Amino acid sequence: MEIIDAIILGIIQGLTEFLPVSSSGHLELGKAILGENKMPAEGLMFTVVVHFATALSTIVVFRKDIGEILGGLFRFQWNEETQFVTKIILSMIPAAIVGLVFEEQLETLFGGQIVFVGCMLILTAVLLYLADRAKFTNQPVTFWQAIIVGVAQAIAILPGISRSGATISTSVLLGIDKGKAARFSFLMVVPLILGKIAKDILGGDLSMETEGFGYLSAGFLAAFIAGIIACTWMIKLVRNSKLSYFSIYCLIVGIIAIVAGLYL
Image 1 (spheres, rainbow, N blue to C red):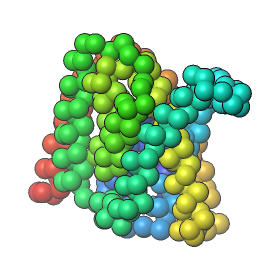
Image 2: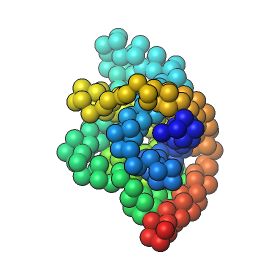
Image 3: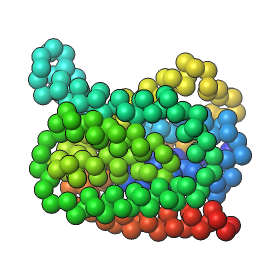
Image 4: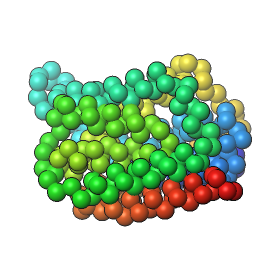
């Protein structure tokens, strides 16, 4: 992998992890264009590294919120912060179950299945269109809603379905305040990403050759910087009901991906 390719893919991951256009889907499309699907071992390590970068960018953007949550949690009381952490844990359960039980089946979908990615991008477009027209969005996140949003996150494991798009859209359609929906959506994924990385490392699935350090570092920095920019921007976009723009984008890219997969 060339460093320029790593930077491009890192920027794609950083932007699309937070913008509701599917980071996994765009990474698959990017790898197909750049030819990176020919190097599965390096591709797995690179994917883990850039996902860690976006998790770190989330922590940086929400550092004050995380500090308050941890401070309240260690008071060992059933306060707002403890309830929020409980909701985060509940939201993680569906994705954790799907990831563990269907890991092998899911891996087959991350091997250049461009037509499938295109179909899922169109589904994302529909979700964003519906969410952008939701009128009554002034509720906090409840425990049951956290589970439902968690199911949406589990479905978004599929390449082409935007995780942020699915979780934010589901939250908004449930009547949750748009700002709180974005905050919950971005924070709920951090433990899952870190858990997946720990699982891959402890399971011995990852290895890094010395010569790969350069492109991994470049991809990490690109994803981290792009992630901070996209996360901050996305919070403003959700509050201002601008999801329809991304709906149109996902529809167009989805159609292009399907046509390319079938005829090119």
